[in-house]
Length: 330
Image 1 (cartoon, rainbow, N blue to C red):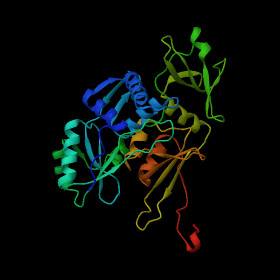
Image 2: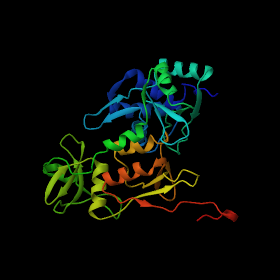
Image 3: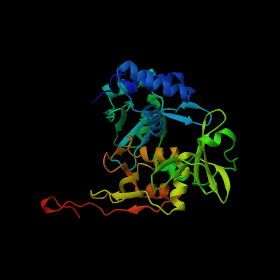
Image 4: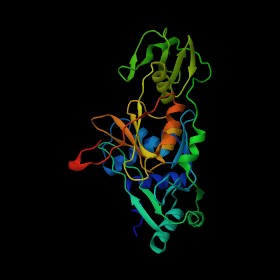
């Protein structure tokens, strides 16, 4: 049996702090990520603190409300990975008490797999992924009770029914006054926001508010609406009939309904969609350095289709890879 890695690890310290603190300001959390990295001698790239916060939320460790500038630690949960041959994920709060119970269980009766996060250069390391091997699903309830966690049969699949449909929010005021000088419009061809002087075309805009907070709004038929940045990008993709999602079934026997979800890197999934995809494996998506694609493992076709449909995407199904003589695939 393996045991949890030392709590002195970067991601482990941050998660312990979050778990014991329970809630706070998101801005303070991001400052904490950077100060922790400085103490460890890590040089973080721009927005690495936000990236860590976003991924921690996707992994189910914390919940984040950006509008209110608040985060809160998620309750500890033990949940099965979909179609993963007897593997369950422990996510949510990881207090000192929970960590001690995990270590005790791993030493005495529980098969524990610890998967360390392997960050790219300039990234802040995430907490380890803790997976439990089991033979009988009925034992998970007792294991969860021992750990002080809630047992959820399969969180990833349950989220399928909760995914919000991408749509513009309530009507909002257009940019005006001095804030108009900070106006930017999302250019689909360039895959980023660019400065503009006018807002007389439909599209996705952002600008600085009176308190210098960045506001993201979508213009439809001459009317501005509130929208989250990620959702707004998908609404623009749908308006231009541009697809950014693909799914490939696994090649193993009996695994045709499970596969890998590929999403273009410039179109990040909204928070709940991201969590549904990440909780299929318990690990953040891998990122192709040259292809600019995020890849989510162990995603059932039904969930991939639900994610795509809720974001007004047509999911492209890639051909299944089958090993052949000489190493060729078809």
